[in-house]
Length: 226
Image 1 (tube, rainbow, N blue to C red):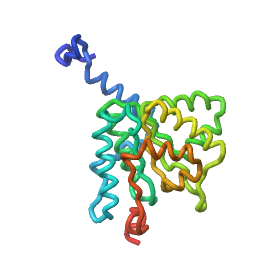
Image 2 (cartoon, one colour):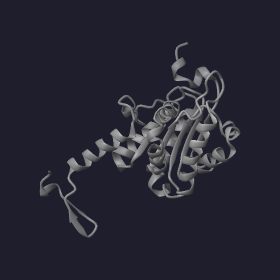
Image 3 (cartoon, rainbow, N blue to C red):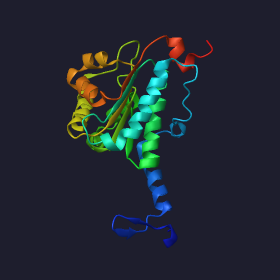
Image 4 (spheres, rainbow, N blue to C red):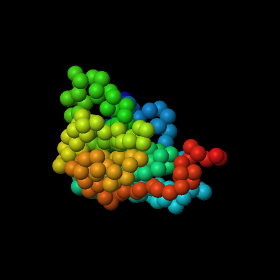
């Protein structure tokens, strides 16, 4: 427990909000987010744009702008962000940077949901499906990584996955709860999978969407040096 010298005035009452309490909350939020130890290192400062295509800098600028605007827009319909397109362009890095900053600087509850692994976990544990789905609906910010991640050139989108995902997105759409989306698919491809789902994502993310397209060797950092 911190001493009275660490206390600060809060509104019209006095509360001892000690730094150790804040740090414990940050620790709890990081743990519950399910962001991996490696991803916890991802920030805006270690995202490189030097020598990259201009769209990469555009994506970083959109991510920074979204983070800066978050408190103002979080309760509106247009409170979400989508970085979509070329694999290996840093979409996950930038969205994770937003998530890490929301947790560490604004104490926002963020849930990281990697699409493929997340749905495998849901499918493997039907006993907890209802509770997990409720959490995905209710959490302050939901980060869906690699939405409809293609396999052998085809989007992974079973009828069950789309049904569950629609229930989550529609709830968040109606209740103005932010989402962050990364996907290799573009907006039209997402809408082709399910129009009701895709148009809701499009509307929610319309003010903060960047589509990354271009030469694969230029955009995919994993191919550097080839």
